[in-house]
Length: 279
Image (tube, rainbow, N blue to C red; front, side):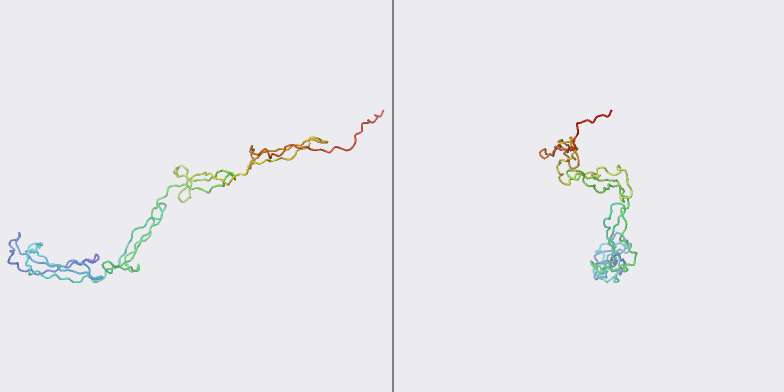
């Protein structure tokens, strides 16, 4: 039998039986009959790029039941020489080489995976060539397919952080975190997303040191005297940068809340003489 890359061509040739040797009597076998010889071609290694080799091998065989027996039952001098001949001289047709699938591009919600598909032809025991796809006559295997088409579970989606508040000193940023479908088209109750994986909704922040509290004064009020010297008042407050009352303003620079004032008196003299009442 000739074997070349999966191509099987069985061939059997018979050789006439030689007479038994003088040292071996056929009737000494368990079954009556004489031992004969049968030659057949068997597979051997490749001798050329596309060519296999058939080797002829002689065996000793009973005539009554065609069973193979030990070679000492046949005359060794009559054993035919082992011949060989070329076989399968035509090249085997090209075939598809199919590689393993690569990892899917996504773990869920439908990804894609690819594999190598080549049209190759053997040109030697350990040599091959790559042909165009048209060189292979059978249907071309697919190279890409969808994978992991199951839906992904809901997941947390965090929106952008807000600005840091207050505008100075230690503060916080806030953001909204939603439980969404993997394609972001649906919003689910928060209980459907794992609480242990929920992103934070608040973080500490700082925009720098705040300015210290300062004294803030109001407008001066009306002078207490309508004529001459008097006093006038105004409000003086210690306020933070946010306008909240504070007690951290230094007293050494506190503005006055009261000052002296003067109102001009009327210069027209007032007469002390009373006019007589007419009778």
